[in-house]
Image (cartoon, rainbow, N blue to C red):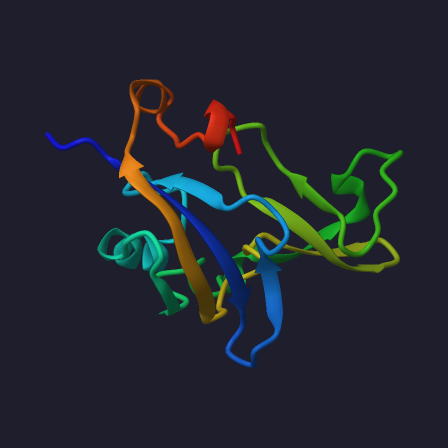
Length: 158
């Protein structure tokens, strides 16, 4: 069994119109252990073929990103479904359970006692354009293997 690869990279994430969604510019690079599901499949499929110093634009389809929009996760619920003291505002996010992987819902609209919520990832249905630059590529160390994820320089969690 081969040791998983840790890759450190800078990225700028844009949508297909060129609008920047997220970027590591001015921050530490992102360190991931490849093949562990810590990043979207479309990146996890391409990064192993890149080496330190490589720069590339990777276009990730919605299927290999955060998936298509699931209309079943767009719901209208009554205010009585929330704690009576909840101050519900548009953009507010919550989980319906503490289970790992439970969907995060976003309040999309508050209309009297009707609350419109969406459990899709905010980037569901979006084609992702990643500009990446690999700054480090190495085998995972024993501590990372034990923890199941990459650590950045100095062994810090990111």
